[in-house]
Image (cartoon, rainbow, N blue to C red):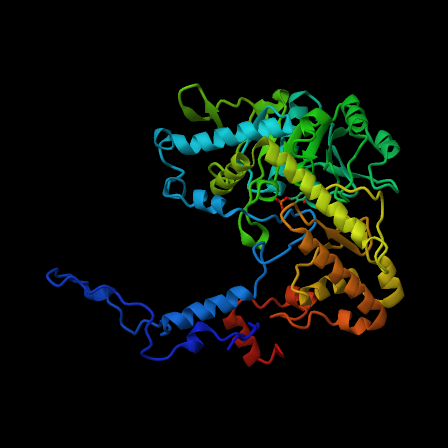
Length: 500
Ligand SMILES: *Cc1c(COP(=O)(O)O)cnc(C)c1O
C-alpha cells in the first residue's frame, strides 16, 4: 500500500522487530585467533534497529519522498539558478582518482587534480574576460568577501585609506552589503529607476574620493540588463573606484557578453549555480574570484600555476590578502563545473543562456495579464522574471507567501519570494534552461489557478499547503523554539511544551 510520507514517520527504531535481519556478516576466519582485550569489550548489547532489507529500503525511500530537489521537477527559485545537474558530473566527481586523493598529498602525486583546477581557470578567464582566478572561495558570498578585501588592499596599497565607501545597488542580493560591511566598508545604497535599472544621477551624486568601488550584478536581480553599464563603469572609474561583478546571474549572458568587457575589475562566479552542481540544501558551492591583471598580486594563496611541464601550487603572490578558505576550496564542485563546461563547449554554453532567457520570457508573456499579478519595470527580461502579487494582496488578502505555499499542493517548488526587496510581494521566477515547455506551461497554469482561487475562495490559498508531508511551518516558533532532533521533540512533548 502506498502511503504519502508524513512528518511523523516512525523512527527506524520504532520499526525494529527482534530477529529481523537485513545484512549478513561474512563468517569469521576460523583459524585466526583474535584476542580483544577485556577493557575494549562491549558490556551491553549494541543498540541497533533490527529490520529487514525491504523494510529499510521502504523506510528511507519514504523519507526521501518528503523532499523536493532538482531531480523532482521544476525548481524555479529566482537568483539561485537551480538547474538540472547532469549525472555524468557525479560520475566524474566520484571517480576514485578524483574522490580519494588527499589535500596534503605531494604536488607530484596530484598533477591531474592540479590540471583540472588550472584548466577550469582557463575556461573561466575566457568566459568572463578576466586575467587570473582563485578557486578558493567556498561560495558566492565568500567570493564577495574575497573581492572586496582585494579592493581594500588595493586602495591601502595606493596610499588611499580614505576610500571606505562601497556602493551597492538597492536591488542587490543581501550578501553584497553584508560582505562589504564585513570587510570594513560603509555601505552606500544606490537606488533604481522606475525602469528597474541603476539611477545614474544618484550614482554621479554618490561617488567621490571616499568611493572604494561599486558592486553590481548584470543582469540585475529583476532579470533586467543594465544597459548603461559602460557609463556606470566610466563614472565609478573616474572617481577612482573599482567595479565588482556579482556573477550569480551569469547564466543569462554566457558567450554573449563578458564582465571584463563591460568594465568590471573583479568578478565572482557561482560554479554551483551557472555550471550545475546541486546546492542549497543539496550540497556545497564554489565561488571563484577573477581579477584584471593589475589586481592579481592581491589574490589569495596558493594559486595554481603551470610552467609548461608541471602544475604547482603557487605561493608567489606578493601582496596576497591571505587565505579565505582552508586548503584549495571545494574541489568536487570544480570537477563538476569543468565536466559541464567541456561537455557543453562554446556553442553549448551560448545555447544555455539563449534557452534560459527564452524560458523566462515565455513564462513572463504567458503569465502577464493574470489577475492579481503585475510586472514592475521593463517587460523584456533576461534569465529570470519578477512579478508582484501586490494587487492580489490588496484585493483578496492573499500574499506572495500564500501563493508560494499553494504551489506546493500542485507538486511544484515555489519561486523565491520577497526578494528583491524593492518589489513588494515579489515572486521571483527563474526557470533555467533545463525545464521543458510543458513544465513551463504547467507552472503558469498553476499560478493562474491560484489567482482564480484567491478571488473566489481565498481561504484555500491562505491555509495552504494541504497535502504536503509538512503543513505550513510557524516561522516565528521555529526560530524561537527550534526542535532540531527527535529526542528534543520527545523531551519537549513530555514537558508539554509542544502541542503536536
Ligand atoms: C546566490 C547569490 C549570491 C550569493 O551566492 P552564494 O553562493 O549563495 O553565497 C550573491 N548574489 C546573488 C545575486 C545571488 O543570487
